[in-house]
Length: 350
Image 1 (cartoon, rainbow, N blue to C red):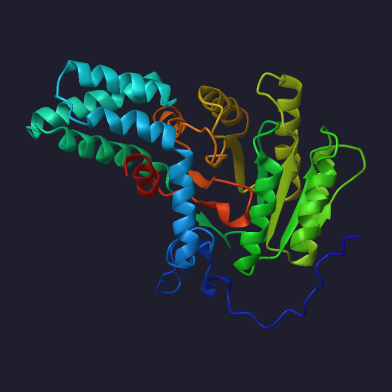
Image 2 (cartoon, rainbow, N blue to C red):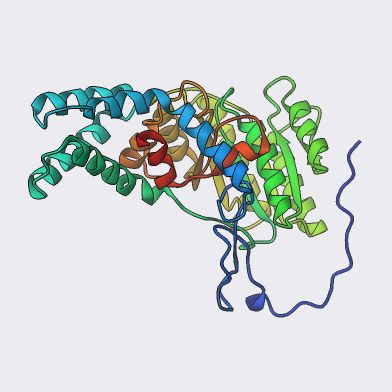
């Protein structure tokens, strides 16, 4: 059995403009009336215990080790010639960077080598690292809280991408920032999806709105209205995992979005797609299809702890530059952290 959050007596509050909004970025107070920035405790070095941060970086490096090996070994004793560029092209394509991102990086690297008169392999390696950081940095964006009451998040993704697990982790992190959370079990298509989300709700002491069967849009609508009535800060709506080719199910996603908006103008405020870092160029296909259908506001890339090649993030940057809010390297709560372009590239080149 699950109980809803108890309604606390509302204290006298100053005008809304004076209330700072927490942000999942490094902790650094801002002058009023600007929002006060805060960091997801799982994510940033400023708040995460040093050992936790070291473990996170080690696991990220391990997950990207295949890409790291294929790229960095090319520069060992290498000459700066056409053969090196051809080998780099093959390595980037094997890392799932895709043709567009690969050609962009190679052309930029050749210009940089010529302009800066680079002659050593180590210099070219550093130049490629700098270009990758420059390419991926626009995807790095803080996840802002407190913009709406409640903040409504719609979570999408294909089956097996880690969508429901990601929702559970995010709920825990939001609570760590003093946010009350409500989950909506809108995945009425997959067997046991409701039960899986309920387990996460139980772990985090978070209420879950669900129906044994019925319209997922109605579940989402009820959850948003319940959150508004109870003063809950964040609503996360789980949706059925589906392939972009399943047009009738994609139409259902659009319906969920429309119904949420009818019940709360401007909602959903965030539409996140969870993608599996192991699926290569299929992930880019998913991003394009879901973005066309829903106008995505952000991505979560999961499972970077296995055989992930990592280049898919470069492909996203060149083809559909949607912010990547979080990346995951495992099943533990602390294995989900905000995306940091420099950390990600360093995990490949160090």
